[in-house]
Structure formats: structure tokens, C-alpha cells
Image (cartoon, chains in turn orange, brown):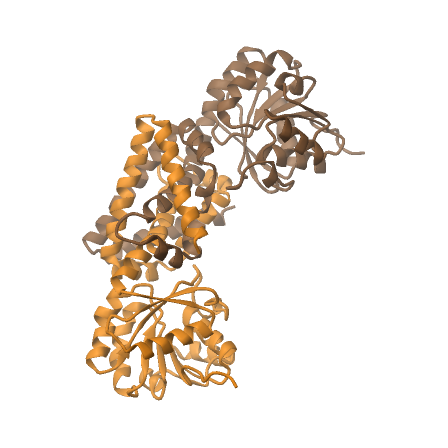
Length: 293
Length: 293
């Protein structure tokens, strides 16, 4: 006899890369679950329905959320609060609302706080999975397999409710970690948002000074390609992320600035031993972070 | 009837990742060519010989270079000058000496100038190919396939000599571009060395501030992994590269510093439009550089 599903009806608002992959993953791992999809545009819903991802598809978020045991906000974070206002009256008492946004404190302060005031249950989720690609076209069912999923419960939902959400993500192959939202934001500022900024900085600065674009094109190899890969991600999405995790990002970018100044200083004073130690520390950090997974 | 080989006997000094891959590539593309290998350590030579990469293997560089039509310096750049002094007396009048170093002006100013004074021919080569891995174990015969190879002829070898070297690299699958060494160094400072520094900066700064290593490990995903990949490269090799391309690197790192300050300022003054434009510019630059290949 199989375990009962943590959620029988799941509403996914925004079937882009994450939302679309989530629908695919739910179909694969929980074929009995009903999926209700909301998208702003009718064409997206038609596309998703054509892929067999929706039992119900509608352009009214309240209608999509109605009767769902779990509602997943999967639009850009900036749209969450407005969606929350639209769906709140339609939610059943036991419904859990979660999201897949990259920033958690901002979401708790805005959307989470609003839903909490309305007597609804909100727990944040951040699946550490994604791609520089966007949209339903880039979605795939294994996106969450082996991914770390951070759960944030700043509004103190009961443990049994957190456990249900945890079980849901685990059925999709994720590994869940509960964190306070501010701590999550400081951690992802370092491990995800700062890498994005430095990748972008690399591409932004590369063309400056006395150098020809044609030569950059000819000499670009895998080093440039990999180091800058993530900055192919949507500038709009990343503007939002930097915006919404502003404090934690500025803190780590100021650290970066000082560390880069120190490296330049070592080159200027020609301290080869310290330069080596700096590069060795960077490599050791990377091995510890990646190797400890 | 096949073309005559540009070089019948090729000496490779230092069979590491690049030198070892070069030996493999020569074996595959020019099976008639004789390969003479030099390594500092006997065990490396035994390993290379066991892999069928050497017709002659010796721990005396002059002996390895003797009778070669082409000598390739494939050790770290810091060892070039010393090797050049040892091999110069053993070189035949028509022998071409080249290298595979990542920095070219420093090599011309030191090793190239010395060989030129001795009446020997030196043309620099920089294959834009490599890996964060090192050593003969990481070598593979296709390393140069489709790679850009920069040739630097600061000491004005005759065109026919440059053409022979070009033909050699093309037979291994490379695409050759002739550049003045200073221009090469400024270009690779932007497209290869600065990406390395920023990848290292990302890993160096990530662990700073109020954050737990365990959380960084749990949340690190492909973004961090890819952005920092190149900084797994040998700190010793990269200390040398930064050292030897010092002027061009400091110039572009100062640009990076200003560009990063500007990004932080945009976050501080909350100019979302300019922040978006900054990220858009980074993405556009990357697409132009990668897309133009």
C-alpha cells in the first residue's frame, strides 16, 4: 500500500521554467495528483495543456487556487503579492501556499505577511535548481532531482504542516533544509547571487579598454564561457533578485570589492607568495564547498 | 600524394597537459613525425614512453632538442629562459622554437630575446585550450581541435617560417591568428585571466561574513560550480600567469573594480532601470563574444 499523497490537488501559478518543471515532476512522481495551472496568457496555458501538464487551466488565479491543497507561486517574485491578494479569498482553511522564489525574507515580509494576516498558511520554498534558460520550453521533469530545497517558516506554521511540504519536495527528489529567511538570503547572496554578479561583471568589463571585439571573439575559450554562463539569465529576473535581496547582496559585494582591491595590491607590491596564498585560498574554498555536497 | 610535413622531428619540452596532448595530437595527425620528449623527472618520461608518445625520451633538454626541426617549450613559463639557455647551443640553424604559454610579451622579452640574440628563431604560440586539470594524466589528443592559436612574431621571423608553424597547428585542428604580443596579452587579460581572477574572487569571498560553511555546501548549485570552475586550476601556474601578464591584468582589474563599484552604487541609489541596463549590457557582451565565434 503506497503512502497517501501529501497534497491531492496542486495549483501552480506561473508555468515557466520552474513552474513547468514542477508540473512535469508532479506528473511523474504523483500521477494521481490533480494539477491546476494559472498563467497570465492563454497561449501559455494551451501549450501546457498540450503537454498534458494541467487537469485545469485558467487565467484567473483565484479560480486556479480554488480547492487546491497546495498553491505554488512560480511567477517572478514581484508578482507574488498581487497574486496573493487575488487568491486569498479562494483558499480553503487547510491550504498551504508556498513559492519557488530565490529570495525569502522579502517574500515573507510582503506576501507571507499578507497571507498570514488573512489567516492563510505560507511557508517559503527555494529549490536550488534552475538554468540560464527561461520559460516552459526549458522545463524538464528532473529539475528538482537531488536539488537542495530551502524551506523558510518565518510565520511559524505548525511542524506537521512543514513536514507535509517537506514530504512533497522529497517525493520530487529534493533534499529539504529549514532555515530562517534572513539566513537563507545571506547564504544565497554568497553562493548564487554574488556568482551571478561576478559572471556579469566579467562579461561587462571584458570589452572595455584598448581591445578589439573580433579578437575577444577569437580568443574566448571554455574559461570565459563557463565563468560567464549564468549571466545569460534574464536581466529582468536578476534585476528583481538583486533588488529583493539588496541588503545581503550589498554586504557581500562590498566584501568582494575589498578582496579584489587586496589582490590588485598584491600584484602592485609584487608579493608573489601572498598572491599564491590568495589563489590557493580561493581554490580550497571551492573544493570545500563543492566537495562537501 | 600527401603534403610534406612542416616538421619531421618535434621536440616537446615538458609533457604535461599541453605538452602531453601535443604529443598525442602529433601522433594522431602526423604519424611519420618523430617525437623527442624532455621532462625533468624520469618517471614522467617512462609514463609518456609507456603511452607511446616518445621516439626519444631524455632528461637533458639539449639532447632532446638536438636534431629537432621544431622545439616546443611546454613547461611553466618561468622555466623557459633557463631551458632556452640549455638548448640554444644544440639547435640546428633552421630549427624553430615555439612555446604554449598563456602570456606572450614576457616570453618574447625574456626567452625570445635571448634566443634571437643567439641567432635562433623564436615564434610564440598560445593555444587557447586547456583545463583546470593538470599533468599528462589529463592530456588528450583533441585538445587543440578547433582551438584558436595565437602566433606572436615580435622578433620578425620570415613569413615562410611563420607559415610553417601555422601549417603545423592547423594540421592539429587549430585556427591560427597572428598578433603583436602586447595586443595578445591585453586580449587574454580580458578573456582568460580576468575570468580566472573573478572565478577565484567568487570562491575567495563566498565564505566571508556571517554564514556557515555547511549551508554554503548545501546550497551550492550549478551556478556557483560553473562560475568558479576555472579557479580549480593550479594556484602556482596562475600566480605565474598573473605575474607575467601583470600590467595588462592590473589594467583590466582596475576596470572591474570601477564597474563593480558602479553596480553597488546602482543598488544603493535604488536605480532599477540602470541596474537592468547594466545586467543587459553584460548579457549582450557575452552573447556577442560567444556568438561571434
